[in-house]
Each structure stands twice: as C-alpha cells, then as structure tokens.
Length: 302
Image (cartoon, rainbow, N blue to C red; front, side, top):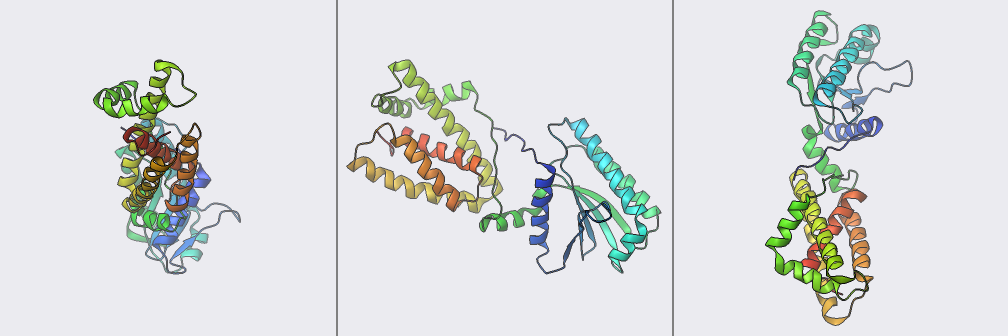
C-alpha cells in the first residue's frame, strides 16, 4: 500500500532540517545558522565550514508535479539572486571560506527540470565572479533522505518522532483478507458475541471488518517504519512481544469485559509513546494494529 505524502508547515520543516544539520555537523561552529530577523534574509538558512550552503523550503501543499516544480524553481531563482546581490554582506560573513555548493532542502521534488534550472542558476552565480564562490560552484536539490543516519540518531534519543501517514485500505482488500483468513475472522466474531454491543451477526461482521482494517492500516505503517528506521521498528516489536506475553497470561486467569479492548489500546499506545520514537498519530496506528492482531490470533479475549 502506497504511503501518502506528509505535508510540512514551513517553520516545522526549517526546524526539522536545522536539527539534522546540527547533528551532521556536530563540532561546535561547523554549521552556522543565518538568522533572518535582523536586516533580512540573505537567501540561505545556514552554511557549513566544508563550503556547503543550505536553504530549507516547504511549498504549500497539496501541489501537482508541475505546480511544485514552478514553486521550487522560483524559490531557487529568488534566493540565488539574493546570494549574488548581497555580495558585500556575504563577503564579510564567509570571510576566506569558498562556497562550492548551494542546496535547496525540500520535503519532496519530482521533476528533473528543477535540476536543469538549478544548473542554469549556478552558471549565473559563477558568472558573477563572487569572492566567496568556488570555481566549480553548483546548485542542488535534496530531501531529508540525505540525512538518514542523523534521522536515526535523533529518533534513538527521542528528539525526532516518525510521523507516518497511511491510506485507509480498500474495501476489497479488507474483504479479501477476511476471506483468506476465515478462521482468524471467526475468532473476532466469536469474541464479539460476548460484548453488549455489537448486536446481531451483521454488526459483529462490521466490527470484525473494522479490526481487519485497523490491522491492514497498521501493517502499512509498520512497513514504512521498518524501511525508514529499522531500530525503531525493532523497538516496536519488542514492546509488542512483551505486551502480548502479558495478555496471554491475563486471558488465562481473568475474564475480560467491554472495557478490555479500550484499556488495552490506551495502555499499549502509552507504552509505545514512551519506548518508540513515533508521533501520537503513528502510535495510534501501531496500537490499533496490535490490538486487531491480538483479537485475530487470540492473545486478547473478553
């Protein structure tokens, strides 16, 4: 199942990228931020002592491929113009440092035309013969996937939380899973008979379909988490295993009731928030996946 796009607020994106840059350039002063409050924006967020400049930009979404290209193209044009016209101030800021690459950091880009435009603008910068620009100066466009090790480090200490967005499974996918796993679905239908609600087979079937939907949605989120950050995925698996062992024993020694599902969901969601670096939204997806899985396989009963 395709993972939908996360739309970033501009300030949120800037803070996110700045944290990644500070983690990459961990030596004090190796990365220098460029505040824009006093005397305006100079067309870059900051620069590193290895001669790279960074500018963060999150376009207003949703945007088509063509529209996104146009917005990001205009951003490169306007900011490289500032990079040229502010020669006096930038010369004083950079000193002897030669800038070899100017990078636009965006949540996503999908057009090679943007790279073509970037090279055109890079030619304009080189042609200006700026004292702080290297002879092989280039302009590039990157996303935060360039900072995968830094993302993992920030997540490992709880500074960054993976926020995973997934689409609802198609009705056909839910029905297909139910048909292919009829014995698991019967487990949920049998358990639902013990609840004051839902009433009747049709309502119990709807309840079971909802659980299958939660399970499939959560599995999509887990696939995305495993691809993004295997360490956090493993943390989730450990949490789930420990919780499942507890549920198995509890189901053997005590009788559940209509509050069991909600209590299990809430407690496990809180455990995930404490032990896995995921957002509240993602913790909810993963907690529902686990509850649905336990209902299907029987560690959780009423």
